[in-house]
Image (cartoon, rainbow, N blue to C red):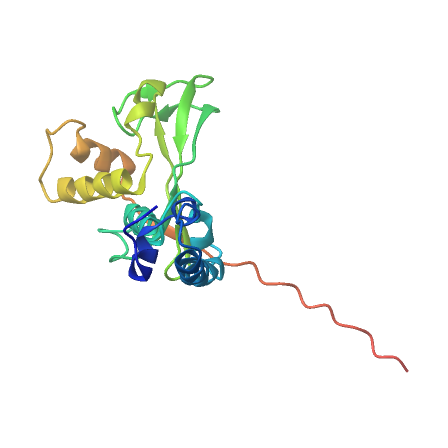
Length: 201
């Protein structure tokens, strides 16, 4: 590889660097590249993005892109949040109401149980939807599966309660009425039990 200089190290992958014909230049660039990689390796999250076929610039770009996909825009004021949808099929032990359609789900019938888990990486706090959403199986694909979808869903619920978005796609006003209200419940960390040792006499 020709026409490169030391200042290009951030835009070259390890594979690219190994193709540099000038031994001295290759060693200089490799040293700078390795220093950046060592910095990345000190972060247990960032080191997951290291790849021999990616430059330092590409690695940081991928990190930024991934973090942007986790950035909360409605619920947590720009915090980084991991979202786990937690959708499962269940069998009704008694007659229940579908939160989306308002239809009755008879005892013994299958339905979707939705109770997402949110982990706020910025604050270290964890949350679940306080009231699980229960819907007929046909609504499974309409349950939010990403943080962005979930926040948009909640935003539309909040708007519907104020009289907006009543007839856009899902009837969010009816959903908000069926749910009664929605909230996130913070999960507290379990306290370790203290073991009292008997004093020796």
